[in-house]
Length: 232
Image (cartoon, rainbow, N blue to C red; front, side, top):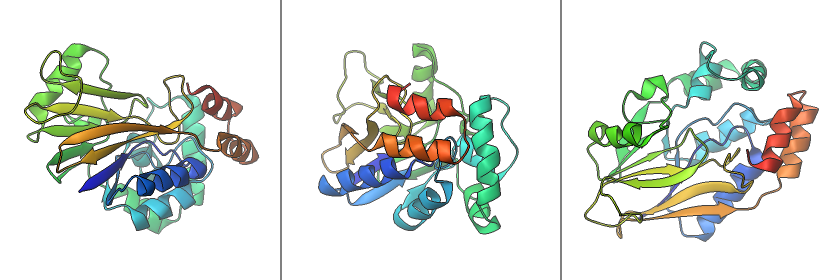
């Protein structure tokens, strides 16, 4: 089975649609969402409806939780502006669905979580090797997929192992579909072949200018549009 694991869509409909097209073209059987469907972008209703309808596994992200519940003060002002807007356009049914999402799911021989398997409800950022290595004690499968940082990475529990392969355990950051932050504006996600136990980190272009224009039309901060172009 081949899973397409997406994260941090952030209400970016052109990026989501392109990611799903690429995933289908590459033979994905199952779509997984690691959270933050909403926040930052201009199309929260459309993105949430697509994910709710098409994705087999959905995880709660910190922006999802903030829109569906109390505002997270750790989210920067630009992000808070988007959260306030998204609260006004999502109806109670959609908000309830967001609020009902789990922090983590174990399926298909993998663990799926938004930020980190260790205390996922606190949305930790893995900013050091020590932080990252500690995560391996917090999940039981051989592989765990995360997002949150908007930067792709593969980390093994074994020094010198950089490619996902049998015999080792891995923490894989799939990057961001809707707002990459590694100076590469292309959308990012991961393909996981469960039979071969192999992961491919995918990047592809999408029409970010369309999303930028929609952000400005929605009255969201201009910086949210500019950062899509810079991939930062």
